[in-house]
Image (cartoon, rainbow, N blue to C red):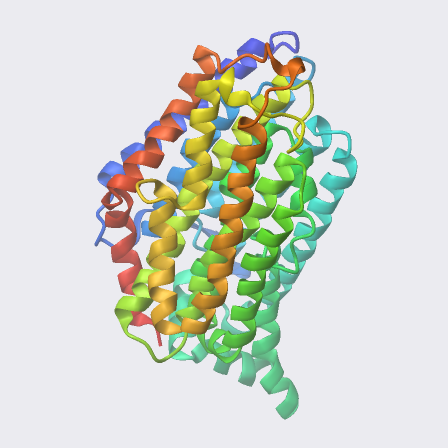
Length: 489
């Protein structure tokens, strides 16, 4: 398209994002909750490497692509790049969406890893080219951390392939459930007794590290706050709304079914990592003054609950209903956090535009007097993130704590401090930014325009719909999780 016609590139990209949403809604309408893996595309590809073109969806995959299809047009409408280079921006955005769709639907590691890396490259350039003053450093941190995790993941799966001869996630999950994967890693690759015992652990740690960086799980989180803070609003929305879910998706799709024995063996240290991620990220958020950084640390905090649920269900003891509640909550939390966090980054982006680049916690005050609609809609997003009953954020957190409390009460008790700290820093935003005296320099700050209200309205509506009628998603999630729990060793 002509470089000087940014409007054509924008309209074309927005149209494609709506087409993707329509297609995903069509798949959702045809999805049979108890029908197992569906919408399968499977073709031979590179047989010598065990690579297949293998796509499909179950409840987890459907929820993930639905979140991607919702957040992408929301982000595209929320922020526009400068006209110079706009068509490159929109091309990268579509490449990012393609990588996300592929990562959530591929069932062969070779195929899946291609999409996993495809999402990394456009995200790096989107931050690097359109980010804030510290974008070069932030984009490099993002790239190095995630590439390091990808290398660990790739090496681990090379070991797994040498031991099993397959990259097929379904076949590997069967081997993991029966313990055959551990035996294969021990007998086929172990040299001596020590090496034989170590090889399964090394493969597990490689996969764990690759996924933990992506979530991120503390202490592998250092790349996230600068990346989220320096990225343009639309890219921050995609990073927190969808890309961070790739890590949680990997824990559920890969690590949990392939390495249940290793997860069980290391359960207590992993639970401590999850609790530390929940509590310390919330504590760190309280010390921030930059609104973007506050929400970035809040994202780490919320995703820590998902990993808490994953780590707690591997224990042999405990009723299946509690394990199912925890995993239902983890997937629910993935979707709900994607909505609330992307909405918060959208509102902060709009506030930054109106504030001539300012987005500090103490830069404003009393905005509810002149921007009541802005205050009300962002307040709903904040209370959704807080987990207020009646909004979507409550459902996932309730289910996670229901399961974790029954299985590992001490972990639930310690994690509850994260809920308290989250309430403190989110309510502090409401108090400092929207309440109190109005500074004279903001006396003419405009409220949301009609267009901005229409952009935010669908996401706000979804927060209420899911909060009041969670069966909209639970009917998709529950059968898949029920199958996992019944086949869990």
